[in-house]
Image (cartoon, rainbow, N blue to C red; front, side, top):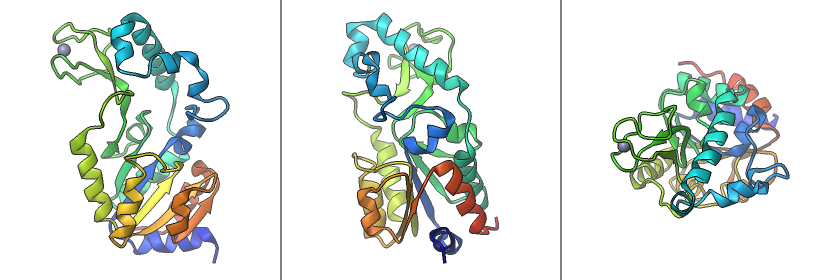
Length: 240
Ligand code: ZN
């Protein structure tokens, strides 16, 4: 039995599946990962404009940088990895898709609900009046005229507490937890596989490299998400 077959058998038998995804899922869509050699942190502007205080320090620079990032993102398209996860959710509608990515590509691929831990860089939001009905062409809120900001969690900001609690509950009630394209080393993502495993879930990891969670995984899959996920979902023979 190959690792894919073992993982597929676990998926087939599971009823409450959660998937935590990270940058490795979107790499094939041309979204640079943060820490790679060509990653975002090599861009000095990313370092200058990633803290919420940078918005006050240099509003124009902040908005120009993020508007350019959003423009890049609007060109990106979902890859077979995103589509495989959407198919999984179609066939097992209780499947929870949790992501650290801000690219919105799971939703773009047709996912019904996505827990976007770090927000979504395809839209602006207004902290003055709470308007989240982006995307707007202007960086001014069309409702109240205040300066808008990307709807993502910046450094210096807290994660959405309600969202965090819901993902922890989802993890605790999973019987299968899949970790895709993320080292799951940084809080809060790091907590989720642990919560799932503590509550009896089986863990599958799918990454290019070894991660800590591999130690508690029932199956470790090694390779690119856009190749392995479609194979895995097909091999699982899931019926709606
Ligand atoms: Zn507003």
